[in-house]
Length: 188
Ligand SMILES: [Zn+2]
Image (cartoon, protein in one colour):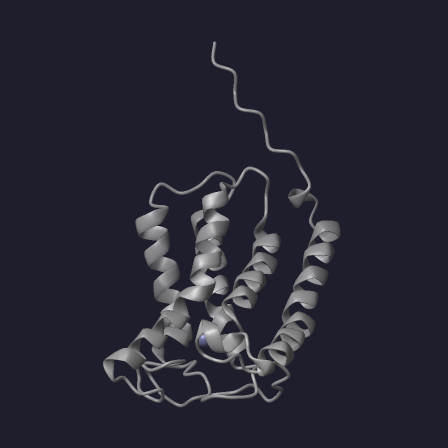
C-alpha cells in the first residue's frame, strides 16, 4: 500500500473536484476516511486471515464493489438528510471515488499481492501495467526504516505532486470552487 497519509492526500485531490465553499467540512472528512478504510483489512492478519484470501489484505475491501457499498452506506447513515450545495448523487460519486482511489493507488505499487479490484465476483489480484509507487511496509514502525525514505520519495512524486497539480488546475478550471458561499437568509 501507499502510506495512509498518501491515500488521504489523494482524497484531497478528489475533494477539490467537488469543492464548493458551502459544503460542510464533514463531507471532506468522510471522503478522507473512506480513502483509508480499505486498509483496515490488515486487522485480518491477527485473526489468521491470509493475505491472498477474499477478506485478506488488498482483498474485498479494495474492490470496486466495496467502494460502491461503502459510499452508499456513508450516504445513508451519515448524510441521510443530504448536505448543502452537493446533490445526493454527486455526494455518492465523491465518496465512491474517494474509496475506489485506494485500490487504484495500491494497484500502482510495485510489491505485495495485487488488488482484488473485481471481488467478490473474481478474487484475482491485479496490478496496473505501470507500477511506479514503491510499496509501503505494512505497519507503522517499519515505515520508519531505511526503505521508508524511498517509499516517501516515490509517494511524493507520484501521489502528492500530481494531487497538488490537480488542485491548482481545478482552482483555475472550476469557478464554483472560488465562489464565496451565499450568506444565510436573514429571518424577519
Ligand atoms: Zn490498501
